[in-house]
Length: 221
Image (cartoon, one colour):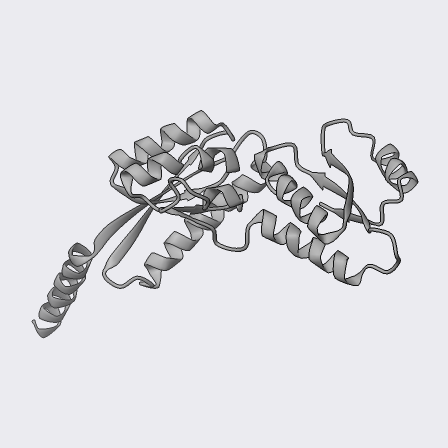
C-alpha cells in the first residue's frame, strides 16, 4: 500500500509540474528545400534538436519551448505566410533564415512586437526604421568585411593602394556588404577592382586570370 501511495504521489507531482509549465511558441521559416537548402535543411535540424534538448534539460525552468518549423523554399512570400500563421498559434519569437525574407518582416515584427533573430547578418536588419525587434546574433556581414579591409590597409606593404576583389553570393545576403565595403575602401585607400557574383556557369579560371592581370592582391568572399 505504501508503494502505491508513493507511485500515486510521483505521478501527481509530475502532472502538476507539467501543467504548471508555460508554453512558449517560437517559429522558424527557412529553406528546407529549394535554393540554399543545402544549409537550411541542417539549420532546421539544429533548431529542432536544441528545442528538444532545452526542454529535456529544463534549461528554462517553468517553460516549455514549442518550436514550429516550416519550409519556405527560400521564397519571401512563403516566409511571410509562415510568420502570419505562427502568430495565429501564439508565437512570441521568430527565428529568421534568408536575408530578403527577414528584411520584409521588419514592419511586421514592429507591429506585432515579436522579436526576430536568425541566420542573416544583414546590417539593414538592425538599421532604422522598424528595427526595435530585430537582432543579430553576431557581427554583421558589413562589419566583418570592414574588419578585413582595415587589416589589409594596416598590413599591406608597398607604396601603391592595395587592390582587392570581392566574390559574393548572387543574393541579398551576398550583396549586403558591398556598398559599405566600397565606402570604407575609399576612406582606407584601397582599390576594389571588381565585385564578382558567383553565378551559375562562371568560368573561375578566366575570373582569376582577369584578377591577376589587374594586379589583384587580396580577395574577400
